[in-house]
Image (cartoon, rainbow, N blue to C red):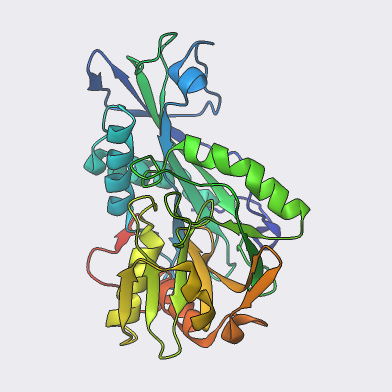
Length: 341
């Protein structure tokens, strides 16, 4: 295997075309076997369901080179399960998780030369997605769909160390009760774009969304779950039917309890509790954990004392343990690591 001539250390978090992508078509009530193709362009009708009514769902995961030289991916079965749930909610034919994992493996194998070497901090980002491809003019589900998987090498999320970020409480709602906040649909991310651009323009890194019903409970940001640490080192994550079930969050909670011996709580978190926590982070595929230094609430600042200058000690230990598992330096729980090559 010969790696591509890429300056791995200079990679950002952007798109670079790789050699192959996986495509499966849904037509006449069934999914095709699927194939690897070279063409990165998607050709669809101007009236396609994805263009008219945003009928699309997606996933995001990574392939890594471990310390012993294997190419692996992390808990892809959970991504497959979540895509099944997302598809069902938008009346998209479910692509079975077993076929999903197989498609991910085939796509990564076909682009193995783009998986960054161990120690560079870079990874191969994997993006599976489904969209309505047939024409739809009335408000209804499409009749035909495509499931696709592409890859792109990306650099480390934190260059020069993880600096605590500042977030603000949003005046907008991310998701309604009984809405689509719990699935990974493109429409959820589209509605967050205005707020994230506005936050950046005003000097903030992200938005904190509260529950739409009462605006008294913490939910998540536009693209990550929250994780909090109490004074007695309890790890707390917000619980809500409107929050996307983050695979990274679930993995961190397991690591906290079973590897680090910490108490964990997955429960409703009232906004009034924030000043009681000593650490805060945002967790997701891209960064694993992004430390939060302060929350800005309409002129008032809520600071997390253990994370103002750098990642707090408990958050740091969680980050090091989970990334150690992903990179093969720490033994993983059974079924967490899918060896590809």
